[in-house]
Image (cartoon, rainbow, N blue to C red; front, side, top):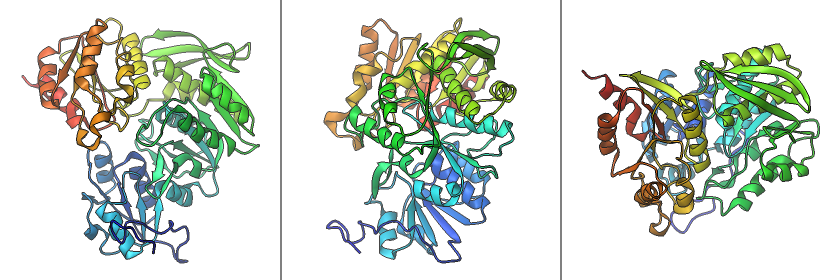
Length: 488
């Protein structure tokens, strides 16, 4: 075994792709509460394996999801979590080589795989993989794709980084030929720094966008683009690439594809185009064009140009798969969204509380614009927690100041876990609030979530829409706010 100077078991052997003939019986997942890892755990349990897991950050909805599946989750990481020894360990990308459980894994010399490798072995084998990728919109687009295939009677398998309301879970094996997987550009594991989506053997791919993100692993936009370029090049000639033609970067990069390509968006230069968007009650209606020909009109509960763009991409894929328009229209109409994506979690005293996963400045801007357009007559209170590895860094400090223009009141807390970020790279919430005020916006800074909640309770008034954005648990702010608003 290769050894590390820091610890004799910190450098592990190559992942184990072969197992004994009978295969693993007990599988342990390190970092099980990640959305992908939790869904993989459920999938493995459905296949009859004994499944256990461990994690440091255990919070809803994934903690409740695992509890409903009766999968035991050990709090925090420790060597004893691997005793008795499991037959296989799946290592999430939150695990570092210094993690005590990873060190014990090396000491015991147990078989192990990364999450993408495990997904390939236990779910994608023998399927046509439909990979949904891009900086933004992956989860909603993946959920839409799975739902359209389901409505078409194709019984798809899927693995999605959020919980589609139509399915009530974010995984399904399916008996049909297709498997929909959310293709993340984040690194695979501490022993494999390549992007996850390169493990998914794409037959068809939807590519929504390319922007700089994940500043903890990517140097710059060119570095990010290079990863997507590799994805584009591995799509087979008989497959398909559906790409957002409103993106200049994507229009350039798809020229290197070795498969057929179709573009979509709002520009008339795209093959597929959405036009004539309008709200009708709780629905959005728009017209679909292919080239210059009007194809059909679509009605959906989704709102915001970014979501209509995502839906258009899936409709293009659906037509490639020869799904009739009647089925596509009905699937679009009955799609109920994804938890934590512009999700209405409750309304109390006339105050509507929305939950959204937005964390990149572009996603924050598009989400606030969409919500304001949907609830134009109501005051929009935008609450944002800078929690992701990129948003806690000052790489996007200036860009965030242009992300909240649609908000009537913006509330920003001190980011969590700042001790993990080098001092010179740290994001500043007070600086963001100063920059927002300088641009004429009403913005406030709070030293912690408790003070923010106190102010929210005091400030909330009938008719408000409170949009809470975070890619983490945000100290259960949504539930605490709704409970406070419900109190007599």
